[in-house]
Length: 256
Image 1 (cartoon, one colour):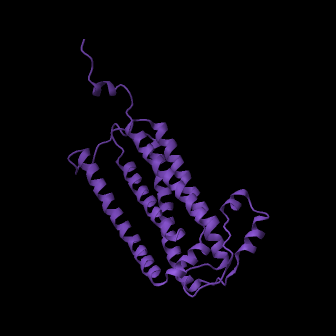
Image 2 (tube, helix red, strand yellow; image 1 turned 30 degrees about the vertical axis):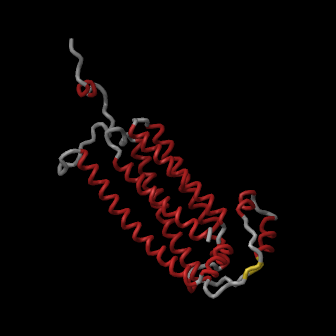
Image 3 (spheres, helix red, strand yellow; image 1 turned 60 degrees about the horizontal axis):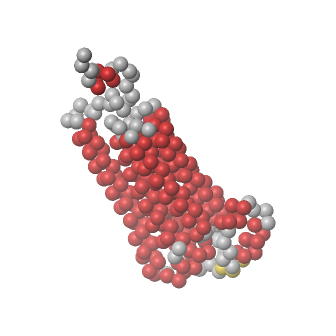
């Protein structure tokens, strides 16, 4: 007897969603659909790059106008340790989302779900650190953008000593003593560039968490596999752009 073809054998079991996926009727085949989806994602990412290019242009102009103030404001208002911690976390998340895509390509569902979950945790860590250790203290002290800037300067070394008496080990690790600082007339401009660029980036991280969570749900249902993983790959492209933008923001703002 001759063996049944693979298609007939597959009918003896319930097919996974990615195995029975059929492209839309307006596509000639799945390859055309995938290439169109990739093109659409790259066009979208091009608009994202143009958005942040405006922030980088503003940064360049104001840093050229006020170089000394830019340096002093960066050292005083921003903590490079917090920025570095978030940089490491985002780099890790880029690696894990690549592993998740590889898991879909090789039909390893567990590998895919675990790495998507780690990516989601990294994104959550980034936002918690950004909101809890950066934005909240700045909001309380009046280190806000533009006309909302009400910070009047203080003895940072005294405040840091008082704060560390009851601080956690993590807060102590991230603390930086800048000594006495007198506000400059252009500090509010630096804070404006910082807030608009990092807040916009943070919103993109939050959006990424939503789509990664959706990808986890789809992966759990068997939607992704060797025969269909285009949307997961597009999510990975989006996440890489978010990470790359932060790699530029970190040195430009925190390491001036």
